[in-house]
Amino acid sequence: MEQFPPLSNQIASLLADTKKIFDESGIHDILATDELIQNRLKICGECKHWEAPRCKVCGCFMETKVRFKALKCPIGRW
Image (cartoon, rainbow, N blue to C red; front, side, top):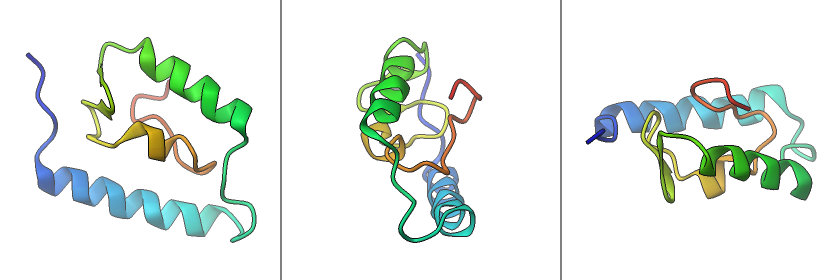
């Protein structure tokens, strides 16, 4: 069974994602639309790395990650 990445990797990913949110987006333009959120969650739900509510590649809680425009799927699916 596939395991989540080590906690140190998950923290590094979270910090990198947080930096992307503020580097790539204006403070008033950081959130994804409802349509984009739903599309991303649908893709996640069909992925072999999905173990609700988390991704086994990055370890992120995807209900949160999909809400930020600047963030990406760790394997490039969205």
